[in-house]
Length: 84
Image 1 (cartoon, helix red, strand yellow):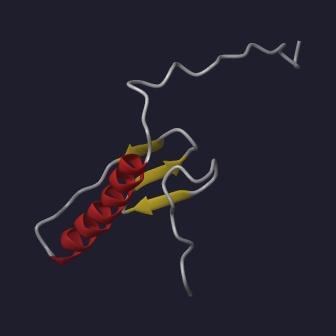
Image 2 (cartoon, rainbow, N blue to C red; image 1 turned 120 degrees about the vertical axis):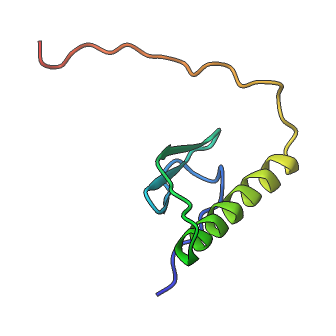
């Protein structure tokens, strides 16, 4: 079974897990959350290589773009509470 390829910044829906580290794709950011223990064994090496590959893909995508100095803060919208 072939896993779907995680393409950084490609959509608002992909999530990749490396160990217990969650990598969430967005159009304007890639968010990392959770913990990742890179143990001194074959399992740690495998996880480290997965993380290295992901970060290499993120850097490659960033280098292809003409980037602003910093993104503006996201627009915050207030909505009425539907339970009141």
